View 1 (cartoon, rainbow, N blue to C red):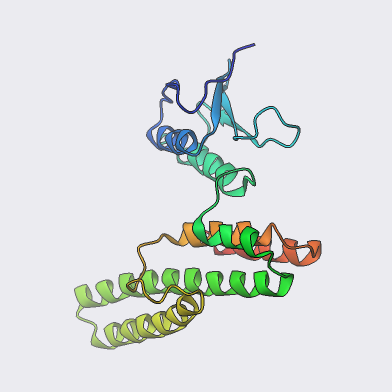
View 2: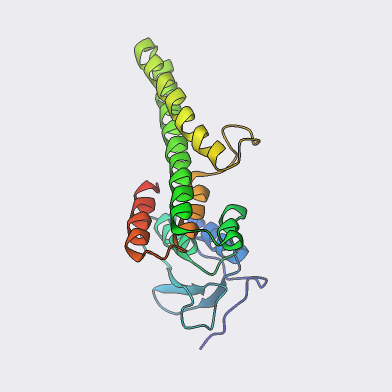
Length: 206
């Protein structure tokens, strides 16, 4: 059986570009890779490699579109859901402060409002650009209003998170905010509420 290659060792290159990029992200996140034979290109395992609850993702060679986007999506889904990865500054706060379920839920809701607002802002900006190309003044004004509304909602939640000193809109991807929310949710003691919030986060992902 092939040995795992650590994150600091060179991994075999996947034939599809999107998959290669996602594997690079896995390596940067501290995962390890093991080469497979047949339809599977290999498998990756998280930094908890060797423990019974380690996360494992099978990486296929030819599954899905030719750019490897389906394989990349599966890899990134595994990275997002891993509970053993290093945490962001926002998620670290939950460990440091021994937050109550009520406080964790409030922070998750704030993160989701920011993520949802940024996603709506991006959609509205795209609609405004299209309206400008069509010289549609009514659609342009409507898209402009949507941008303002999205900014107001999301920026209020951003300020509530104590991030008001940072410029708006923040230089953070929606997925990063959702990843922070996932890590907070994982620490809830209420399993039913935890499941509800995980499903809500999944619906908000692109």
